[in-house]
Length: 318
Ligand code: PMV
Image (cartoon, rainbow, N blue to C red; front, side, top):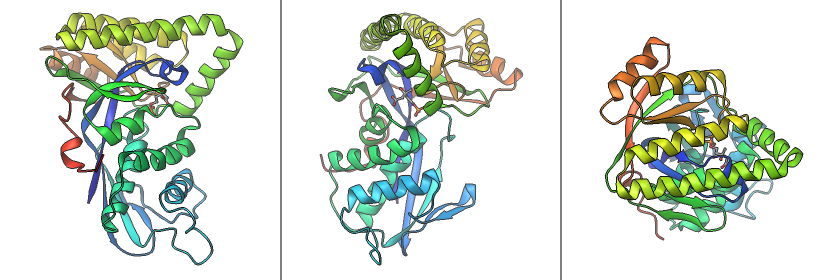
């Protein structure tokens, strides 16, 4: 059995694709993969999926891309592509929700394959294979989801420098609510790219402003200042609206959360649907009740500690 955590992006999604920093944390739940002797079948019982790497679906293509990176040169006719086990996938986070389930799946698959082969796979090799799978799912990912799935904990990510673990002065409590709509990472990333080519100077101003909010947010978590973190989240949400990655449900959930006492609320991940985060210390019940009355499901979690989640179960060599 192998595990990788899902994630939330506290600040900085989309701008991170354009080189700005982002702040993210691992969830305590994620994806587990169990291996059995077999011939490279990939099963997701919850979806009634039972495929191999030749399946034309995005999942099949991602699986093939991952195996080709892990075991290059073994994917020819009659060869097993290194897949001499069957893999059973269980998602403990909602999928297509902006909670990093696809990256967690890719990382958990790498770990499961390595364990089945009693092979030591380093972080760099797992990241490389997970990015190949993520590229199938998302087009041109920044790598933040894969970085959190591999490293766990809490930290700052940039495309240039990768993952830097960060320890919050105190755990950051979050309410995570689902809009009920699938998030649309590929579509929203493509729309932001269109805007960036149509109005480059204006979009660059937004990306830089989001980057500055990430730095303010990091300073706030280091100081345990939730009011400042919440303010950065609210400001970040306004920029995300201009980038056209919000949707009516996201805006409604943010408004409800703030009315219920949240210090900050914003979408997390690709947007266009998916999940919303609310920072509402001591007011979590009120936010959940307001969302529930409006038909939105939610759960409470916390992020902020290095190695708090994910890492304890990884045991990867560096
Ligand atoms: O929707 P998710 O969980 O895959 O997050 C996407 C984050 C983006 O910044 C929008 C894209 C990226 O590759 O960083």
